Amino acid sequence: EAQVTQNPRYLITVTGKKLTVTCSQNMNHEYMSWYRQDPGLGLRQIYYSMNVEVTDKGDVPEGYKVSRKEKRNFPLILESPSPNQTSLYFCASSLRDSSVETQYFGPGTRLLVL
Amino acid sequence: GESVGLHLPTLSVQEGDNSIINCAYSNSASDYFIWYKQESGKGPQFIIDIRSNMDKRQGQRVTVLLNKTVKHLSLQIAATQPGDSAVYFCAETSLNDYKLSFGAGTTVTVRA
Image (cartoon, rainbow over all chains, first blue to last red; front, side, top):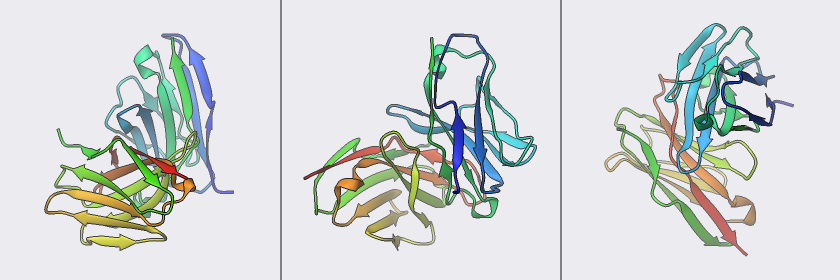
């Protein structure tokens, strides 16, 4: 089954404790992206990657890092989480030649930073 | 700054009626628009898209209209069903770009 998986689905942590949210897709997609969703703000793009070893900033990259060492994985790293990073996070992927037309979204990761 | 936004945060619709969800955009460089549906507890799902060289596109029970003159986008859902209850987002981008900007979303509730 074609899918995007994220782990963990729920996470409670404390300020300053480094964490990683994993994202994996099994569709051989070149393009992957991370979004955060906050009430009243819709989804905002954090980082995206057009292929292995190619990443770029989205609209709200501050406080986040990503890596793309393999095509299927695109982890989101919070080196020193802060309470304003409490949010719902979505990973997405799509075929590069279709741009963002048919992005497949993961189920989301709900993060609470105390 | 430039942004994509929806006119109404909520919409209540009687089952069987048609729904119209509106979206205004301000980035004149955008040439590709997408509607997503997000059900409770799930990630957004692609519904339909439209490129700026079109003003109308139809799918199964859904139609997207694009008015470039007033920078307005709408999603019409025919014969709304309970399963259509969700949050609907419009999004804009350029075909040569991989950055996607979402509106704030409209919550559609279908009344039985």
